[in-house]
Amino acid sequence: MKIKLEFLCLAAIIITSCNTIKTAVKTNPVQKKPSRILSNNNLSNNITSEVYIKTFKDIAIVEMNKSGIPASITLAQGLLESGSGNSSLAREANNHFGIKCNLEWKGPTILRDDDNRNDCFRVYKTPQESFKDHTEFLKRKRYAFLFELDKNDYQGWARGLKDAGYATNPKYPELLISLVERYNLDQYDRKENSFEKIKREDKVLAEITKNIPEEKVEAGKPPVAMKIYEVKQGDTLYSISRRFNITVEDIRILNNLPNEDLKLGQLLLVSK
Image 1: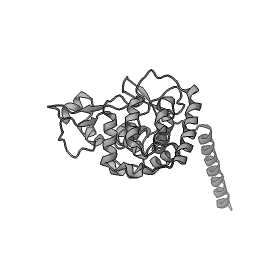
Image 2: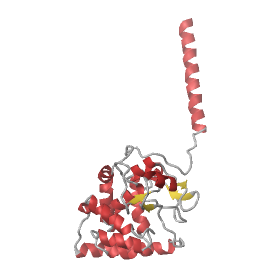
Image 3: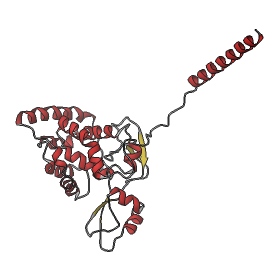
Image 4: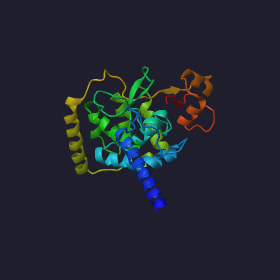
């Protein structure tokens, strides 16, 4: 009887202790670190362009069918601006298009040195959110004329993005078009008949018109973070890495280079 009583007392102490612990956890929750989401668990290290395309082609097609942005253009921009998903911004913030913060952005953020020290960039929970926000980002007055193009006109979109000021590099259209053609990305584009085109245009242009009062003037500043360098006579990966404060290995990963050989006039992504 005595042993049984001692056992019951011990059990009561254990239960009381457990309840105390639970209460402590409830009243003192762990605070999340603000403005930062790390890692993209769906992608491994040193992602190839082929793996990147296979991973994100479906979301690019979905966004194309909703808005009219060719899937080939979205994929080419993602490949170029995220280094096939290997850039630090893509890995640490799931930001595959280098879109910066502005007054409209209410989500989490991360700081990175770019045009200025500690420039503010958008953070997404998943890469897919980045693709969706890329579509929404383009639904503004400056890009409105692009949505009147056919949704399989990747060349028109590539040139139009440059004309609208999406990127300052004069060879931006050629970069996108070369990626589309190198990886046959236009296979994911879809034609639309005249009725479908009119219906889509009306929907998207109405959304753009609705967004105009909320748009903030960005002083013509390029909206995305992207630095591209054209290889000159005498350049080596080491000299380029020193110039842009980036490692040789990072340049190779960002540009999917099999070795350190460079060609005169070659274009390299040199921002992480």
